[in-house]
Image (tube, rainbow, N blue to C red; front, side):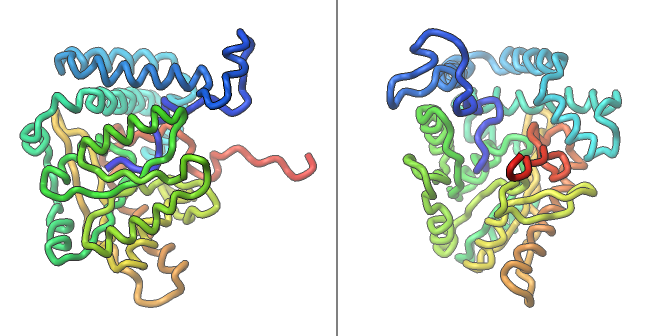
Length: 339
């Protein structure tokens, strides 16, 4: 059920952040990806090619070692994770309890990548047998009546395997993906998720601008099909302000807008790791308010999604993979005009 965000460790180099080096590194030929982007793409390619052939126990041990090594270095991503987790548990980022939780969080995050790289080694029977799902009837009953569903979820557990579970239950779905750099890496992620049985729509066109994903999502919902979207982070101006763990942030408006426009059921879900398997809880439908403007209805519904996410994250904080800024008061202030 992975959607809009690309992988945090695979972010491309900042535009214009060229380092000293040979001309080929400073000024790539027209149409060529920057060297840093090509190295990132090569690393992911190697992961998919190699890790799937490694026995699961050995791969799990190796990725735990990697997670612990990065955790001990306490780089920017780990510090951001600790700041976010401190809000969840009501502590200070420097508290030992938060440090211990961030270590578990990094192990959970690296488990996601280990499982993703080894996906072809997991059988349909394994994923169905080791997934404990509750509330699945909220999806299946609506689909049986020909009504589309929008499953909104945070970045928790293994969202791709949750998507595989839904596909193996007989319900292929549509999601969206942010276009990554280089293009070859984006194409690999799309191909990976399509192998899981997802229809993946790019958020932006290859040459820039909108890819008109919203219209296609609405069409799928009107056809009575499922759509799955990540929904707990949208710091753009189009995001909907909500209260989340006692502070303000912005979340994605799309799930509520799609439910209002198409009549689909909006179903929040939370995910977590459970032993060697996976946990999924699909919550009851968030109804469209009977009164108010479209903007007011979206605000009410998105806050309801945030409340459910908050409860699920509080129950499984180590499986929330938020290594980026989330709350508005954590954002760096923009420079004033003319400064």
